[in-house]
Image (tube, rainbow, N blue to C red; front, side):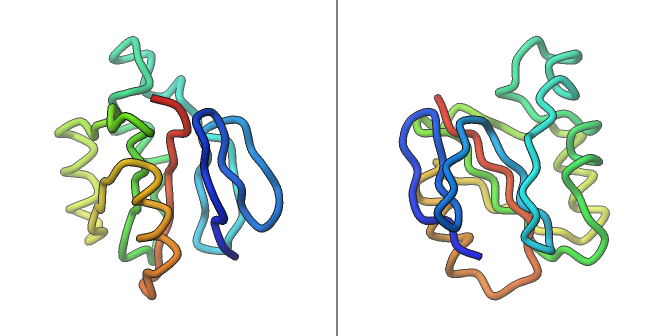
Length: 118
């Protein structure tokens, strides 16, 4: 599976374009991001909560590639960072266009979370 491209508001993976934030599972399955898990704490989807981290994490992942948006606005809460650290999963956070390259090039057992707007 390969992420082909992103434009503001969309991401194209294996020929299919998604117009929402996505989570890519270890298996390659693509899920819609559950922003409400973070919005209920912070009022925005630009801060990732521990609850959302629990939804995103999968046993066996070594790396989370986080696409922080085209304008680099998404951040992990301290609690979410601690959660991933405790699980032994390294976080690589970059603006979404760069994060796509990192995701495609990584040989680690990885999951991805990509914010496709700001």
